[in-house]
Image (cartoon, rainbow, N blue to C red):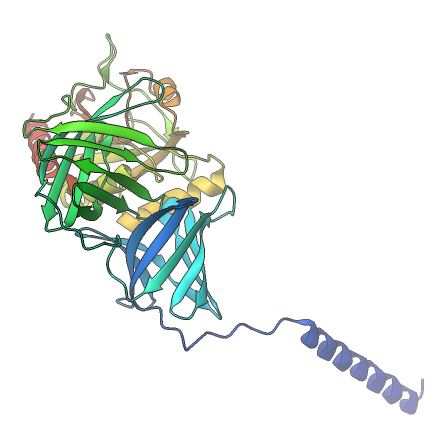
Length: 420
C-alpha cells in the first residue's frame, strides 16, 4: 500500500468513527436536570388512600440538617428518621431502607403525587399524595371536644377468628388534639396522633412500614368503641376507662420448657460465621439475647435502646446477640437488611440469622422456649450460661411510664447478675 492509499483509508476510518459517535450521542436520552424551581425543604402533610374513600393522613418534614436533604416523620412528640431525599427533574424518591420500602413521587407545583411501594417493586403499591406547608393532621370541622377523655382504658380488640386480644389504651388530650398508644403483650402501637371532635376521635401514625389508622368514640361515662382500619379489613375494639388497667406480667408469658436451663443454638451472621452461646466470647459474661427483625417497628424501638446501652456497658462484662428472623433469607437480602439496621442504630454487637418471622419456626429453631408470642422478646443469660429472665414484647417510649419502668427493671436485673 502506498502512502496516499494509507491516508485515504485512515481518513475514511476516522470519519466513520466520528459519525458513529455522533449517532450514538443523539440516541442517548437527555440527562435529567434538577427542577431548581421546586424546593422540597419544609413541613408537609401527606395522605394515604388505603382503600376507596378511606384516607389516612401523616406529617413529615424535609430538612437539610446534614449535607443531603432527608425526610423526618412527625408523630406526636417523635421525630423518626426516614431516608435521604433524591430529586431529579420532576420526581422525588425517598428510600425507606428500614422497612425496604420507598416513597416515589411526581412533583406537581408544591404538591407530590405518588406511591408507597417495596424497593423491588413487588406487591401492591399504596397511593399517596402530599401538600407542602400544611402541618395539621386531620381536617377539622371546628367542632370542639365534649370532654377531656385523657386516661387509661381497658380495651379488647375483637378477632374474626374468636381470639380476642386485651390491651391498654393510653390517651392524652389537649383541647381537640389527642395523642396516645395501645399497649399489647406483643408491644405498643407506637406514637399515635389525631383529633377529637365531639365524642369522636381519629388517630394515625406512619414511620415507613405501613400507615396506622384508628377511629372511634368516647362517652362521658368512660367507654370507648372504635376500629382499626386497614386495607386488609377493619378490627373493632371496645373498652372502659380504668386507671388500674394492666396486662399480664411480661416476664411470665414466655418461659423455658421443663428440664432446660439455657438455650442451645448455632446461627450464622451475614458473613456465614456461626455464633453460639458456648463461644469463648460469651463465657462468664451476662448475655442479652433479643429475638428481633428489621421489619418490626417495636424491634426498632428496642434496638434504639439496646445499641447505645451496649456501647456504654460492654466493658462491665456484658454481651448482646441479636437473633434475627427476616422476611427473606437469600444472602443478598439478609446482608442488605442487617447492614442497614446495623448502620442506622450503630449496632456493635453480634447479629445472627435464624429463619423467617413465624412463631412456629421460632419454636423449632429455639426448642427450649415455650409459648413464644412476640417480636421482640428479650432473654437475659447469667454468667453460668443459664436463662435468668425472659421479657415478652417491648414497651417503647410512646408508652411513657411503662417504658421508664422497663428500663429501670432491665438495669436492675443486669446489675444484680453482674454482681453474682
